[in-house]
Length: 199
Image 1 (cartoon, rainbow, N blue to C red):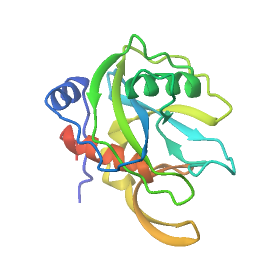
Image 2 (cartoon, one colour):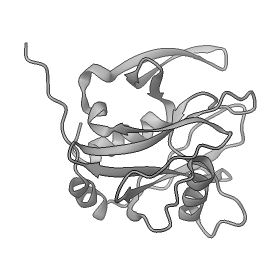
Image 3 (cartoon, rainbow, N blue to C red):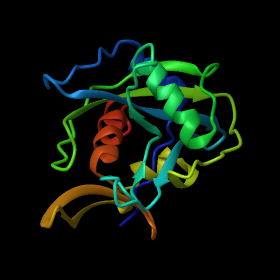
């Protein structure tokens, strides 16, 4: 049996897909808004995306997880786009002020029993080239990952994890021995890959 070759994702395909996409707002009255940034860089092998591994912290419900840079909207933020830009710079040192803004994805409503309700809007950006990453103390490490890896059936799986003391099964991407993408980040990436015709 011949293994399926992962597809090369191009920036042009992402631009086309997002040009006409109208983000669906989440129906979550009273939830606090937040934003994350899906940051892309194109090279000869396709697109890479910027991920972070959150530092291990007892007060962080996403402690230790692989995630996209982002966080909650603060009073000084003009809008959610500004939130994504500010949080990215704080967490990774990446300045998105001059980045190409490709669009936004549908809102997500992660239900975390230990936190007040939050609605997350993902924004998609493109940089001309990789930049130096300067992770904050909230971030264990920041790294670039080829999106083509996520289209490889070998990395897609279901995992059983204990969350809030209960075993649950989640779709996930196992992109390395120490890099499991699941939860909110998987719920952003999978629709994005479908939208751009990669899954």
